[in-house]
Every structure is written in C-alpha cells, then in structure tokens.
Length: 278
Ligand SMILES: Nc1ncnc2c1ncn2[C@@H]1O[C@H](COP(=O)(O)OP(=O)(O)O)[C@@H](O)[C@H]1O
Ligand SMILES: [Mg+2]
Image (cartoon, rainbow, N blue to C red; front, side, top):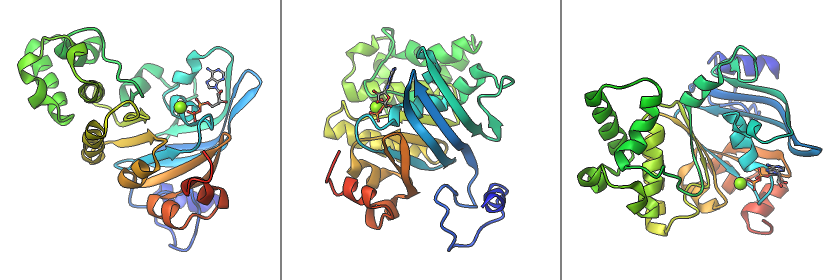
C-alpha cells in the first residue's frame, strides 16, 4: 500500500481496480495529504485516525451528522483549531509535501495559502473596498493603483463586482447576507490562496444566494482546491468531486462523489445519505 501511495504521489498512476479510498487521481496534484490525524479537546477525542488526500482543482465535500468533527477537521487544516486551549493533535498533515506541524513550517505562510469562509458571513465593519484591501495591505501592498486592481479582480472573481462597483466605499454591513458571503469569498481571493476552506458557507443563505455561491464554487475550483463542509447532501452531490463521510470523528468512507451517493461501500454511509439518521 505504501508503494502504491508513493507511486500516486509521484503521478505514476495506479491500477483502476485498486480501491484505496484515500488515493487521489494520478493526474492531479495532491495539496493535502493527511495521515493518522488524531485530535483531542482535553480528554475528548474529536478526530480519530483520519487519513485523506485532497487534490488541487477539485471540490472535496465533508458530510456527516452534527458533532462528528467536520469543523474541527477543517480548522485543523489551517491550524486555527490550536487557538482552542487544551487541544492536542497527533499525526501529520502534509501540505504540498511539508508537514504543517513541523516547527520549521511558517504558520503565517499557511494562512496566506489557505483561506477560510465561515457559516455566517463575517465581513469587517468597514467599507466593501477596505474588506478586500485589508489582507493585501497586511502583506505590505501600499500602492493605491495595485490595491484598486486587486479589489476589482477579487470582486469580479467572486461574481459580485457588478452589484457593488458603484458603492465600494459603503459599509459592507449594508449588503445582503448572500452578497456578504460572496464578499467574504472575494476577501479570501485577494490574498491569492491555494486552498479555500468553507464551513457550511450557504447554511445561512436563501436558496437564490445559495445557488450563486454554488455556481461560484464551480468557477473557483478551476483554480483552487475547495474543501467544503456541508450538512446538505444535495449540495455535496451537486458541487463536489469527492466526498468524505465523517461519523464520530472517523472517516467512514471517502470516494468520488458519484460513488458515495450511488453505491457506497459502508452501510453507515448508505444509512446517512438515505436519511436514516443525522
Ligand atoms: N472548542 C471546543 N472545545 C471542546 N470540545 C469541542 C470544541 N469544539 C468542538 N468540540 C467537540 O468536538 C466534537 C466535534 O465538533 P465539531 O467539529 O464542531 O463537529 P461538526 O462540525 O461536525 O458539527 C463535538 O463533540 C464537539 O462538542
Ligand atoms: Mg460544524
């Protein structure tokens, strides 16, 4: 198994019949390779031996009932979970070949590569323009022309430019919830991330705004890896390439989305997707 994994990581291909769920497609580059990840909050174990590989230019959905560790998993990927007192992790998270837990790994860099969008849109209490310019400014960009370009490009990429271009200096709180969420996505894009983590990004939105964000995710995956937690199984089926089903902190099954929803291997996955629990 180790050699097959290595072969895949070196893009040497593998036999179609080999069913190693954590193995990504050979033609894709692996962004995250998570191995034997365990996490405890105090004495409570929230993640149990999680093994998952995430590819670039794909949408990976994380599904599972409330409390199964989806948000914890996501926040581990950018080390945000370490802000919680009394957290302990074991295992490795390789990000483009480097273990993010290594002392030599620069956490600030990780934060520029890995953007995050939360359940509730959380714009800063500032203008639309400043919301986007904030990150680039922190990274030392002062040139007004350049900032203008970054703001426009980010808002265009998040499909909100036309709605806000005439009111860039108005407070972001004046936007609708759906617009605020796309603004938060634009804010991520401004720092040119590699991966965007999304924790139930549409659960506070109406159906129309949800569709807009879903369409946006389909566009964004042409350039970025998206890892999205969703409790909405239709959404996972609509927008993701791969789906991981979590239960009690464990990955029960991880596979191509079509397979998870049409022909899952584990009966617990079957029970969950057919609505028997959760
Ligand atoms: N900050 C925290 N401190 C202690 N326990 C936590 C904390 N956050 C989450 N947990 C616990 O970890 C488990 C997983 O939670 P979470 O990752 O939020 O699940 P999900 O996002 O799937 O609903 C739950 O049992 C939850 O109570
Ligand atoms: Mg959660």
